[in-house]
Image: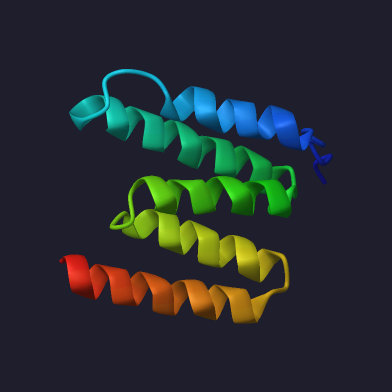
Length: 102
């Protein structure tokens, strides 16, 4: 069993902002930043810090609302947190956005 990382909220916010604030703001650069945020969420999930991982996954969706992987990641995190209702809400949110945008 892994230990919870216990990252203070301000530190987590700073990590997210640092990843998102880097140049360039388009193309390959944004893909790298989204991948870095996704990896951060995975590490937090492995450490069973689900609230922090959920926060990062929500930021991923805010940064790129048509990235299906982010919705799946967020749904999984809610299920791991024993919040099935939130997972279902994310499913419907993703379905609505993806139908509209794609």
